[in-house]
Structures are given as structure tokens and as C-alpha cells.
Image (tube, rainbow, N blue to C red; front, side, top):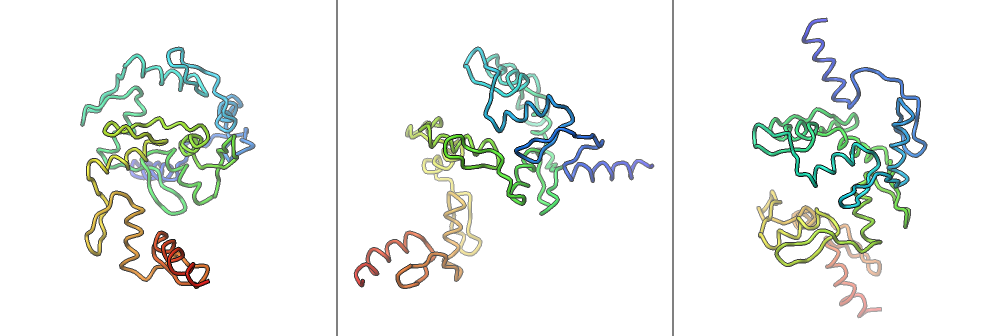
Length: 250
């Protein structure tokens, strides 16, 4: 087989998010669809579903599902970041993280969803994305049993039950349950409006506000009054209609 054919085959495998070499995986998870070639890997994986985190950091008491994750975490306390990007000089605790980071500079997105062809720079991001197509939500909340596609979303959700708001604005000290909500809030202080309407060029701080605004240019009216069946483009306009119009005419 010539070099060109070999590279083509390798790329096909990578784009499907599959391993180059076929390995028999005889230990399936009874919660999700994943399977493993050794029982010990399945045992560690199951902790993602049970919430078991038996390895504890002796500095901050944070817990982890395996020793390798604990070891990587401990680099936070030691400050050791031996792997440096040769483009922007950003440093990383793990060589793998440096390799993934490098794709920001190269634009490489080697993992392709086999349903919608969307591409990703990180394999795990593709796996989480594919659950949108399969409907799989393998991570349940142990309080209300709501399920989630990934552990990050589960963790943010659990803050609703604990009341934890670990992310604080350094301008006004307002706190948030997730980093993404803090980032969105910071635009109030910076004035950043990165989302632009392609019709009128008006800008918005978040995608939801842009989505609502676009209805002003279209005939979309998703909110219906249950009393008179009148349609509205925005929920707050519907509420105002019900309060000041329909309630006056029973």
C-alpha cells in the first residue's frame, strides 16, 4: 500500500472517532453504551455514573475517580506546567492538553460526527455532541434524577440543589453557578456584544437575545395566548397582553 492510501485510511478512521486498530471490547457498561477491553477500565468508568470518587487530594480535599486525574490535579498546587506552546507560549500540565491546544492555531478538527458531519478538535466533545442524535443522557442527578449528556452540565445543575455559586464577578461581586453565566454577565460591564443581526446589524450580548430579535424581521410568533389565540414573538409581550388585555375581558 502506498503512502497516500495509508494516510487516507488513517484519516477515515480518525474522522469517525474510531481507533486505528480494532480491539475487542468485552466489558460493556450497563448504564450507557460504552464498552471496554479490560474490567479495570469498566470499573473506573462506572464511577462516572455512581459519583464515586475514592482518590482525595491531600492539599484541598478535592476527590477524583482515578489516580491519574488526581496526579494531574496536584499540578495546580505545585505550579508545574512543563509543556509550552511554541506559538503563544501558553503552558500546560499535560502533553495531551498541549496537543489539543495546538489545534486552535492549526484549525485542525480531526473528529467528525457520522450523523451531521460536524467536526471537533476534541474527541470527547464529539462524543457529547453525538448524544444529541442518540438522546443518550447517561449522567443522572442523585437528588432529582434529571439526566444530562455530560458531567459538566450535571455539575452545574447540582448547584441548584446545593445553592453553591462558586464563580464571582470581580467588578460587582455578583456570584454565579457556572463559568458560562459569569462570562455572559461580564458583558454588562465590558459592553461586549459579539452577536450581530445580519438584517439590521444590531448587536447583542448573547445568542438568545439575538434569536428573539430576529423574529422582528420574520413572521415567527411562537407564543400563543390561551384565551384569544393571538400569537406573539416574545414571551414578555404575551405576558403583558394577558395581564392588561385578556384579563380585562373575561
